[in-house]
Image (cartoon, rainbow, N blue to C red; front, side):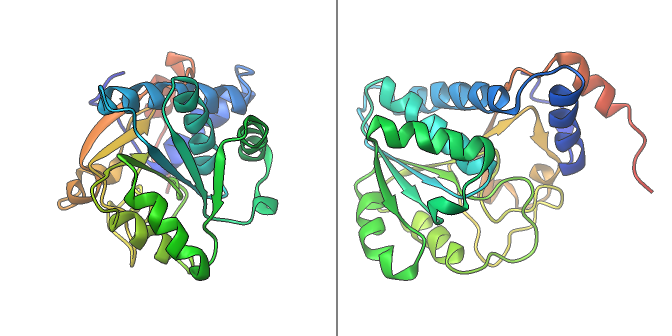
Length: 233
């Protein structure tokens, strides 16, 4: 992937929309491609270490990416535990489909949706070699509300884990690069399609760490067309 391309939140959404509507690529296929490529990067980070890996998933498509990443890591022989930062009944669409797969696989899935469940979740995070942040995606802006602020705090407090963010660190604004009241400090961010505009904001690298761009399988011509779109008024 071209590491020099930069896209805004609006442009990223347009890439997804055009891939799905104009080219007929199902959203779950884009999610699967993204997750497989992210998992390969995580496996490279693990090296000879067998894990374990804790994947913290929210209720949106970022969480869906996390479920699918967990599946691929488990298939590769890595010990995986999922921390679910929402009620599973809140999941919908592609995220719900990928959650159902890991549930049927029997992957360990711990509820992490209330402050009362924080202690057990911290134990999972503290024994992980890698913590994958798949809580909030590019659509986030504003302030992180409870209990997700406590979830992010627990991720940052993971004892000795490498923290890897999926698409962008939870709590970081995609366009401005400004952190919110609770923002994941990642060692590595595996972002999809292209770097996000906010990553180049001074100080954003303190939260993104290194940035790798992963492909989602959208036709390459879409990015060229989206970059050529006039800026909104």
